[in-house]
Length: 460
Image (cartoon, rainbow, N blue to C red; front, top):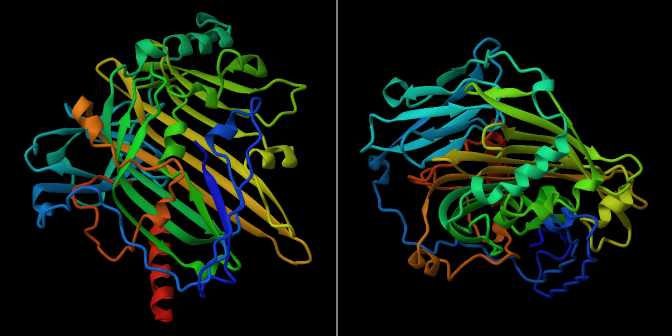
């Protein structure tokens, strides 16, 4: 699917409506698979009527009142034991269950546990550290501090490992059907997208979704359905333009490179890259191979560079952290930008990606992904440029085996062209999420919500 960036003219927003939609067919990006992962249109939309207040979409019955009586929420921070440094995107899962979440970029977490399982344990894992198991009884409802200890196992010499890194990545692709879920899975996931203009947050959108995750051996696409969504946006901060992302959770699902290897590299595309071993690491005393990859010298196409973390025992991809090479501004822009304002130049300033997998009973599954995209607009005959920065992240918080009946529940699925910010309402309800697990917001996001609310109140 295509993730679409909208730039909407703000000069006509408060009148009555005329919609002009200009879309161009994207040229086939056979050499640039990243285009399938996150491609961008710039579309002018002139709106001539008073904006209509958007309502939250909720295809399922609302949560019962008093739902907070059915669960206990725990908040805290995950840090390195010695330095106290926060551990971003650490995985948390409830022992014996499929309830999971991740810490945010500041190491903070929030997890909601049903009251009927008070004796459970939380298992925290992070690459390079020993797993930490914590009894719920030992956790505080708020401000718990969980200290992680680095793995102290002596690393093997590189000569012990195969020196051919390219052979290793081919083995990872070949074992996909063996290592990853081969049955339909229904997942609950929390989704968040943020947009900043220069350094100021101007739009925040969040959603809880149900995902019909297809087997990793299947060519069928994953399907998403919206449960609850909310947003907060201050369009006055967007100056003359409004920035929107199209595609929503499908951007995150397409980042599942083991389900969609064509979005990173297939065996045919491996020849474009150079793979080398980095220093291996451990997670809970389990060996993790670390592979660096980058495009080969002489290849000037906008490809990728980054690191792959591979479980040494199963040869399953555990994590991938990579970026797009955007040195060639025009070529990289062509992968994102379809149409731009006539009086401007538009190009990406950064494109970063992260995908994490978790293992359960010998099978691995999509757990968390994050996309960071920067866009610069250089205006002709204007002194200042405009910079937009967007972060899209999604975390699986619960999952179970899919059935034929569960597939019927996705008749009202989200379209690949969905704009989550248009499917949501405000942040007024502090208990909005009820029992659903979410990613704890960074302090900057919490602050942004408060600032935007104040700005909107002043205008009323």
